[in-house]
Image 1 (cartoon, helix red, strand yellow):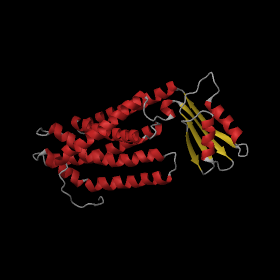
Image 2: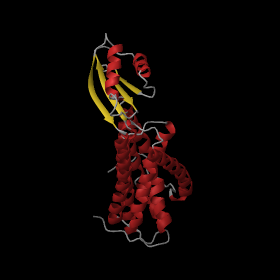
Image 3: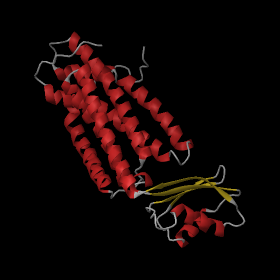
Image 4: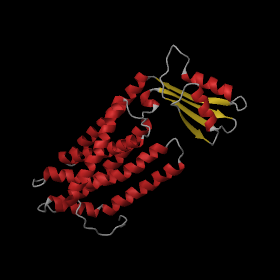
Length: 308
């Protein structure tokens, strides 16, 4: 027996679909703009996609961020990014500037500059990553292709398990969630990197699972009430699983909130993407996935496959 958070509800979700579609068009439009900007390399891309250098230093004593930033600016790296980890006195330096084979590596120049400035605070190099522009472009293209392939896989799976229109609608809802999060990151000027792609694929899996729960109930009710209007069946089905959907979303949201607040700077954007994505994913499962099927198949006989 599931947790009854809201009790029995009778909300006309299908009746609100036009307003939801208008809101979703705005979300998706932002996401498409973000996608185009990422493809062109015009967004705030991390070194994974833009190319550049990442180097992590561990100091014996606490290091002042202003002093470290001044060293980088003096060395010509004005657009570098710094992350300070107080535990262990660690400093992560990211420079979005492709290294040239003819010159000294960016990491070597940074180490030399810091060695000269921090003579009284010795440090060791814990790790270095250097990515050329061609590799960054390849990673960016591969990441976008991975998202597309995952959506195609969803359509095939749901078309086999339910019906083709259900598969397309679920994929559309998932793309809706992914594009919305990407649009938000572009709007806020947040860095777009491989960690964000990981968050988007995680969100896609969560959103799909949430949608399948609703689809399962719709399938069951269509079998029990084959003569009822499709909109009536969908509304009652969504209302029946509404408490379960909200309880699941709130539970996952609280876990991601803990990661956001206490997980540290490294996964800050990752957890932020999941936090916002869970809210959008819950919305799309209710207001996007099923209404798309309704618009597509209203007035038609839906032959749902038997449960496997």
